Image 1: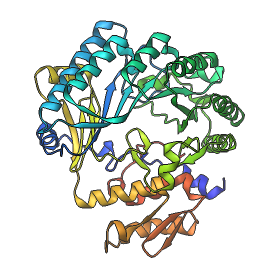
Image 2: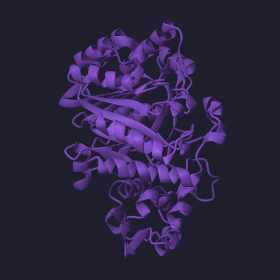
Image 3: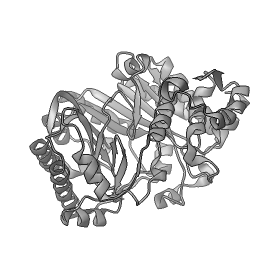
Image 4: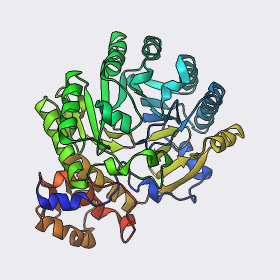
Length: 444
């Protein structure tokens, strides 16, 4: 990777799983707006559903998710009951019985609910929602917690896709991040899932972790590719100890340098493409027959809070503490603090904490940023005729000079070199970032 790209790679920019980003949400968006947006949904249009379970049995040092350690089962059960009450509250505010095209359980570790708890929540969902034929039903899993009983229960619930947090298979790296997870444990989890028919598997990998080297991430990629997951997502570790107390347990002296992070990301891409995976967007890889590269090839790739997706639903309903819902007119996020979330739900009120409204200008910029992130190209006139974007063109001018982006009238094309730092290019259209101190992870 040339020095120009390395210079831009150190910029702190959002991951752009939404625009505006969650950092720009405000408490001015309340439960009233949330209820109004729910009531205005068109029952003829399918929506996606996200369930957040903010508990793990232990907290890994690197984790940046909204989760906490749960020791007592009664605490988990109390959260499960609140989640079911929220399902009823949300459904009761809709004029028509909504249809679900995608269902995604995230966390935390959603399987911490246990087979009985998962079944209970699923029953509440089916009582209030209709599900499209062949809908995708996905769940995030900790490979260390996948048992034959859990795999059987997930199959019976109709789970069609499982995402496993692999991160790295090097024992030294695992010890440094507080996640001891032998390769055999991952292989056994895969066997349990595949044996019950859950064959669509995603793996998450992370670069930029303590003690990682180019050689070690290459080996991780080779071992992971041998397990043949359908999709692999490679994320850069965001070290934000001032925001995440658990990250203070990481020895910063063992973290790779910025140049080493870049080399690791490049090595991962090389190894996975050599193993036959197709690169999708900025950081996802998929087997050629998978829906993701097909969506990318046809211009139908999208990006939401779960990352790159072929989900075309315009509405995402988020349930659970800290979850975010997407509507045509804005975003709304639930209370992140679990006890406060539960109290709000038990009082019969939506747990809405903050959000933002979307006007036509925001929608245009959101589409521009999404197309840059997904297609590495956008026609500005097709999205926002006659808008001009004079300020944005001025911001992009140095990047054009550095051959990261090509500009032909209103058409922008990210070059092959520029793809690695497409988040920086997309940020040119983010009016919320102008003159603001950096508070996001590095571009690479």
